Image (cartoon, rainbow, N blue to C red):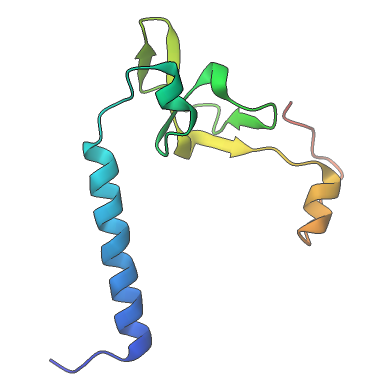
Length: 102
């Protein structure tokens, strides 16, 4: 086929890199200790969520239980909460009818 443009080649390399990272993290076992969850890129325990983090969407289901009692969440299901001032700094505006999540 035709040679790819530099931008297209870069986009393809980026896509392949993302796929490899996703495969590697999918094969990685769950941590066996609380400390292992602290900085884990894919999973987090509910008790280790920061004050500004919340499970979102609310319909998300935990992927399992740590030591049979504490929910394990995917990091993809965790949202960072921001104040109205933080949204303004990002060039966004909170709608007047919006209510705080927490």
